[in-house]
Image 1 (cartoon, rainbow, N blue to C red):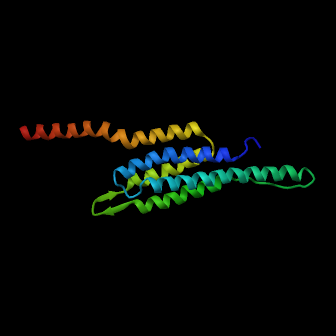
Image 2 (spheres, rainbow, N blue to C red):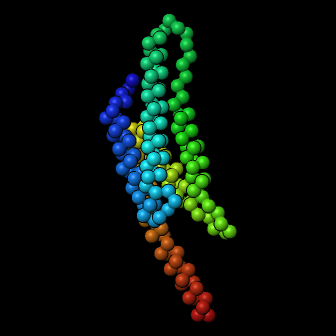
Image 3 (cartoon, rainbow, N blue to C red):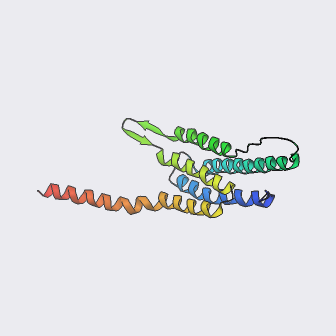
Amino acid sequence: MDEAITLVYILQNLGLTVFFVGLIGFERQRKHKIAGMTTHVLVALGAAALTILSKQMMYDTLELAKSIGTDVNANIVVENTRIIAGVITGVGFLGTGAILKTNSNVYGLTTASTLWISAIIGIVFGMNYVILGVVTSVFALLALTLVKRVFAHPIARYQVENETFEDDE
């Protein structure tokens, strides 16, 4: 085993998940969106816990293979990515439930996306890729908070300038 899954490992990775995904969930809750902090944290915690479980199952399988030794001709397949794939699929269905379409408007796409990225962040922290988890969280927060502010004003200003120009003619 290259890395033991200990209580410290679990607390560290679940704690990082709660903190960073909690920030994303807080942003959604502050805007009174359908999925707030609790939902985001629970989705990410479930993803992180299943990822940690997947790693532990892989370690247990490898330990079993070592204990069997070379006397037994056994094929042991370790596919720890199946659990992760199941999490991503399940969260995709959860996110679909957050999307509403009325007449010509679609609501909930950003909330569905934040649920999905929250699960991804949980998986990343669950695999102990701390730097990747932190960077992904920061970029997700920047996308949620700054992108609209930075790009909304030039687009609105362009539209206002064109409308003013057309009205002056």
